Image 1 (cartoon, helix red, strand yellow):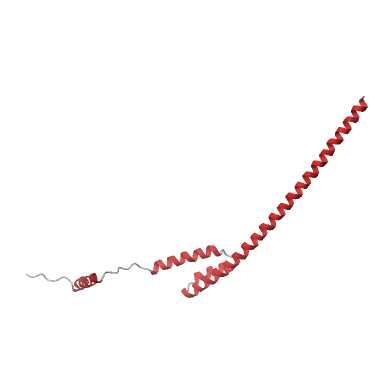
Image 2: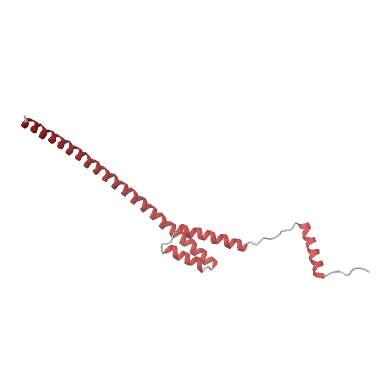
Amino acid sequence: MQSASGLAGTIGSGITGFEGVGEQRQMDAAQVQLTLANAALVRIRTEDLRVKREQIKSQRAVVVSILRRDASAEHDPFLEDVALWVAAGGDPDYAFRYLIKHEQIRLAQEQRPTLILPPAARGTQHNVSSQIDAGPKAEPQ
């Protein structure tokens, strides 16, 4: 009897081992699929980065030409320095935002508020200013 029960235990452990090998094969197949999916994801990310790098390279060339043109037109050495920075690998988006801010400040300094008077008030203003320039009038006695 003991030999029959020992034989049954050996067969049972062999079947369990067989199930373990089948599960291991399934796990290995799943691992292979996961590795292939990760490789596909890496290829997609690599292509996205290549496209983004090309876009930045193109933007950089445009921003450098705009900055150099403006630096030459305004005789502004600081804009030339920014153009040099972008050409050397600086962020073109940051430089372009800087250029826009620089233009806003420059335009604000150039545009001083002026008061435009209607035609009727212009003559009055002239009379008032000529009276001020003439000095006070002597009062009759």
